[in-house]
Image: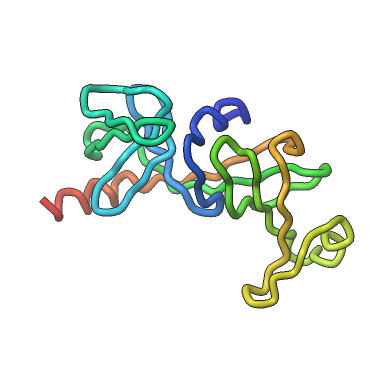
Length: 151
C-alpha cells in the first residue's frame, strides 16, 4: 500500500501500532472492530453507509469481507524506519516511537522521553514521511468465529 492510498483511507485518526484493515469488494479500508465491524470510507460504498464527520461508516459482517487483518504501521523518517504510534486524520501528524536499542541516537534528533510510559517519541508531519510499510496478520477466521458465536 502506498502513502497516497493510506492517506485516502485515514479519514479519522487511528492507532498506528494496532489497527484493522477490512477487505470489501476488492478494496481495503481502515476498520473499527468491537462487537460490530464498521469500515471507514470517504464515500458511501453501499446503501448501509452512514455519513459521519468527514466520511462514512458502513457496518459489515465478516461474510461480506474477503479478509480482515490486524495491522501495524512503520514509517521511514530520516532514512530510518520507526513504528507509528498515533496517526492523525489524513496523516497531518504522526507520532513515531524511537527504535529499540537506538533511543540515545534518536534523542539526538529530537525524540522526547516519556518516563511514565518508558518510551521515546517524536511528532512528525506528513511531508516528512519518506515511505511506509504495513505488517498485516489475518484475523478473518477468528472474527468469523466470534461473529457466529455472538448471533
